[in-house]
Structures are given as structure tokens and as C-alpha cells.
Length: 556
Image (tube, rainbow, N blue to C red):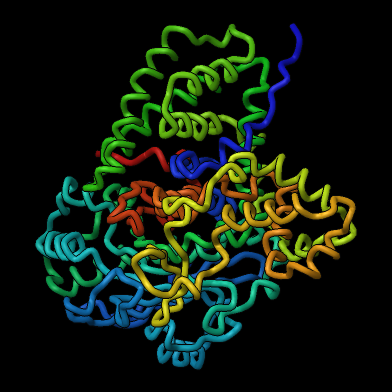
């Protein structure tokens, strides 16, 4: 039998926001690869200095081969009216920083004065990531009250919430005095994307368990019990994320390409397997069955998201019937048959879920890809100015087929604009026809700028160089650079109009969060959402013996 010539999926289809907004966590996701890479590190609680109410300082660390990373936690009392998920908040129940090494007493005092202030404070190059979080008051107080009275909390209530705290920001890479990336980028243990951010969130999760146990014990020393490990394991860390995350995937094209490309390459390699072992197929089926618990506990009030969840559930019913009746390991290229059927019969939400699930049996395919998910973006910043206008025209016609067909003279196509808020220096999106400030627009309307560029170059002499063109059109420099980048990195560009009236900004957020490994996407509007991270993950004392399928161990 001839080998199948399976190609990578077409970027013009995959990079549509409706498709990207249907991505799910997978074996490539950063929280899962973090657990795999740090499971043999030594975990320790270095300091736990909290008062009876649970306020004070705690320190946790991971260490290996003389390398130490420490989470420093500051918990404080705030009034209920001061607690907010919005980025404009100025107080939080707890603030955290990941310190490079073991902090000294002087470091702790310095951090105590600055970390709870977050953006208003200043840290040093000894610090790597910064975060803050608020309690889910209903869940947190219920757990404390239950444990202090000698009983375990209500599982149904906790399953509905899914966490005790949710973060509202995780900062890194030089913000507010944090270490710039160049200081740490060559460390092999954190070469994978967002390793330090994932470490911070994991350790914050452990702090939330220790804090509720401590408060319960302080409240009723004679009767209090500790939170059951099975219940704790079923709790993650929540996160509230808004538009601040959206421009990241526009501003980091080669990084975005590497994320998507690794996912597409994994899919291609799996589809290209001629033989499938019965154990591999059974493992896939087992993960699929286990994953239903997480899907069934996915609760949201968002009509948009509920439609997607129902599409996923309906699709899985059809898929399981197909899998049972028409799939066998005796068939050649079984995974390609499975994928092709899914592509032809399922909507995006379920199709991309199946793509994620297909990766589960294949450590040998996935693990080598993990270290290819970072990018040295500066290497691709230089524009090849010696090339011809004709070269650029061909690149645009090949890589922006649907973009150059958009009519930006239509109101719907030029509807929104992106800007930076004055108060918090965070990205926002607004209706340009109803709100002021379009003159401060950020260069995030790539589709419109590509179309403008195309309209200019088709009028130019095609043998002229890019250098000659940019001498006359310097304002187009950013988008010329992008066009040459997409020629090398086909998955680097969103193939959609990010300023159209039909824009659903949370699709951009979900794309990034799926690679983080987030689950339970819960849109609160079309511009911000809540998610859960590390739900089902091994507890700190279980990491060394954990398996990689923990993400499917959520129980109802």
C-alpha cells in the first residue's frame, strides 16, 4: 500500500478566529509540559507565617542541582467592596512573586513593601513573575467553615466553582522591574514557553489549600480536619482574563506560528501512522471517556459558550458511535480515517477537541516538539529590503488570500479600533463610529493594513526594491515586516479582520489560554472570561509519581 501524502492543514482555514477560538488544552499545553518537566524537582514549603485569620507571608520552592525558584506569598485583609476581578482594582486578597533563588530576610521585607501594590510597586531583577489573586468567597468560606466543624466541604458546590482563588493577572518579562527575558532565556529547565508563569500558578494553588487548612485549624483547634486530598486535587486556580491578553498573539507572530505549527505537525505525524497499536487506541478511548466528567462540569451563563459546549457534546455522541462501529486497529492509517471523518462530520468545537485527544497516546511525537514552542523573535525582525516589490506582491497573494478580498470601505469592516487605556495601560477595543480616540489606534488591525499595503504595491513598479518602497511609505514598515515573516512562518498570522463588527475578542483569548492548558472557558462578556487551571493536577507531594493524564481525572 502506498504511503499517504498527508499535508499540514491550510493556515487560511486554521488561522480563522472561529477555529482558533475552538482550541482545547492538549498534551502540548504548557501546564502539562511544566508538570512533566518539574515532577522530579524537590518541592518545599520554606516559610508559613500566617496569623489566625490567614494573613501573613508564606514561601514555597522548587529546587534541583543548585537551582532554586521560590514563590513568595503575601495574604492580607481586604473589605468585600475592595475585591474585584477588574484590572483597575488596587487591592487583592493575596499577592505573589516568583523569586530567583531563596529570598533573604532583606528580600522578604523589600518584597512585602512592593508586591501587594502590584503595578504601583517595584520589584528587582531577582524577581521573575508577579501576580495577584482574589478568593472565590463563597467556596473559600464554605471550605473553612466545613473543615473547622470537622467535616469535608460540599463537593457539588466546589465542583461548580472549581477553585478557591482566581488570579487577575500574571506578569513577567521585565514589567515593573522584573527580570528581562534575556537574563534567563538560556536556562534549559525553563526553555519551554511560560514555564515560570506556570510554576507560579501551580504554587499559588498549593498555598490556597494550606491557607484554608490553617484558618480552619485556628478557628477550631480541637475539631478541625484537613481538606481531603481527593477534593483538593479536584480544585484548580481560577483566572479572570480580559483584552490585555489579545494583542499578544498579534504582536508575537513567530511565537504564535511555533505554537500552532507544533500542534499541526503533531496531527500530521499521527495521521501518517500506518499501524495503530491496540494499546494506543484503548488509551485514546480511555482519555475520551474520562474527559466527559470535565465537559459535564463545564458551567457557564454565556449563551455563546453554551452553544459551543452543546455542539461539543452532540459531536462526541456521533463520534463515539462512529468509533465503536467503524474503527479497528486492523485498518491502515486509522488516525487519518478518524480525523477525516471528524473534519467532515463535526463542528469546529468538537473537531479540535478530537485533535487534542489524538495526541494523548504519543509521548514520542509530542515531547520533541515542546522545545520548539519558544521563539527568538529578534532574529526575524530585519526586513529583506533588497527584495523586489513583485516578491512582496506574491507573498501577500499567497498568504492573505481572504484578507485582500475584504472591503474596508464598508462600515462593518472598519468598525472597531484597539487602544491602550490611560489608567492601566491595558489594551481595549472600541467602536470607532461611536467613541472618541481612534487617532490613538494601536497597530493591531493587520488585515486592514495588509489590504492598504497591497493596494499600494500593485501600483508600484514591480522591479523596484522594498528599500525604495519604504523610503516613500515608512508608515507601512510594520506590515511589510509581517508579510515577510508569514512567508517563512505560515501560521504566524490570524486570517481574520480584528476590527470588524463581527469580531468576538474572546476567541483571541481562548486561543492563547488553550495553549496554557486552561479549561472551563466561561465568558462573562465578549471581552473577558474566567477559566480554570491545574484542576485535577497532582498535589505537591504527588508530583514525582504523577501521570500525564491527570487533566482527565476531574470528578463530578
